[in-house]
Length: 63
Image 1 (cartoon, rainbow, N blue to C red):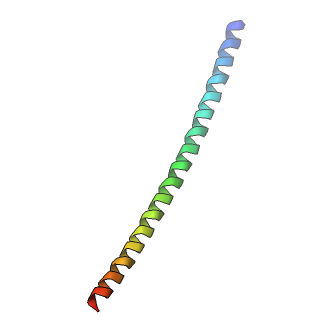
Image 2 (image 1 turned 90 degrees about the horizontal axis):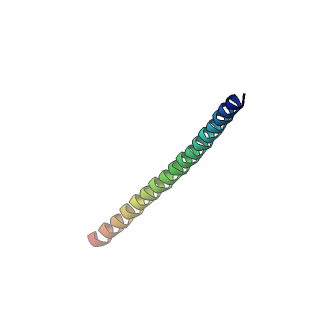
Image 3 (image 1 turned 180 degrees about the vertical axis):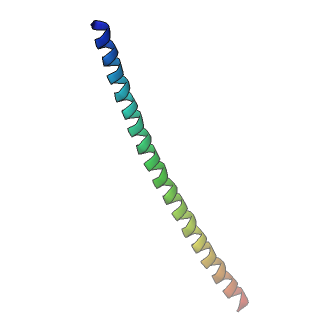
């Protein structure tokens, strides 16, 4: 009887650990996707700004 209770308790603990691990992984994936989005947005802004600066310099030089 005691052995069965121990097995059930261990299975319950194993499931709890699995769920906590899954929850942590989902949090990290969400954080990673957010970080990637911010990074790509910054890259796009830099490209737009560098194109604008290049165009201004070219226009100034052509005058």
